[in-house]
Length: 354
Image (cartoon, rainbow, N blue to C red; front, side, top):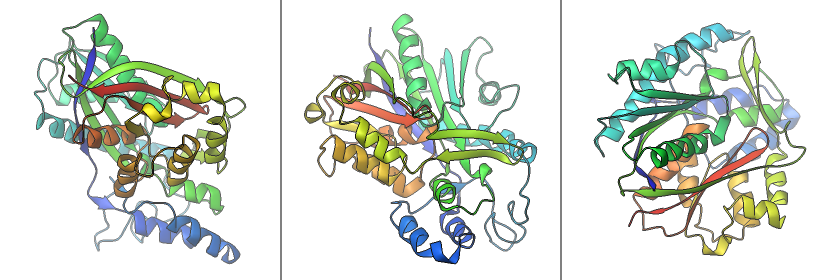
């Protein structure tokens, strides 16, 4: 029995905060570090990032006067979670409505939700189910705090469900509000890491109907001695993201090892793969994968386009990439791959439906 990713819908908020957040971050670095900051920020490959935090009355950003982050210390975790509980379900439902424009979203039997940027109970899965009128008999799974590769885990779970129950219709939702976690720091590395993240949501339907992409064998592996390179720390002032500048180099180095290389490509030689859905975790990560796997320059165009338009939306990002690939040429051997806390690499194979 095969499972298929039938379609993907996506949604982002309407407030582009990228330029304002860069200006804010630049004002915090030491004057001697401004040149380095400017060079790194200009090479990010990001043109836009979107936030649920609204403009101020005079059109300013969250870091301007009267904005959410106007004063220091910044609002605490409790205030940020209030906004998460309000905005995350609404953004997820916008993605579901976008999905509904492509495929019938009725008869849902299972709901799988992934999110790592907030907590609320009853869970966001229950809130979404209630707001869109799902039956109380729908089986729910909430995947929390797994970071950027959670989309793989969500799709893998949906695949397992459909393979065990051919009549299942699984609604998969990823939603992240990363801009709720800006940190008042002055060091270049954490500032540059924060300047990659934006808000977004995606929704997908996975069934046994042969439409879209067939989801093939999943795979997972972990880099040794790398658990400190990517992490979230829960603080009194939101979730502090730590994304080490060593990550791209460690990924590139790991991909030179035949065993890790095979594990991170589902056992398929890179030259045989005609469709790459790599999580757009940052330009340097995409460059590392391209060079280490000896890919063609345009192999990760879908990932780079998502990064340029939206930044890194954690678990939602890979779904945006798959959405783009679904509208492109037929794919016979595809690989979806994401890196995240651990440092773990998770993925699955896929191909266009017959």
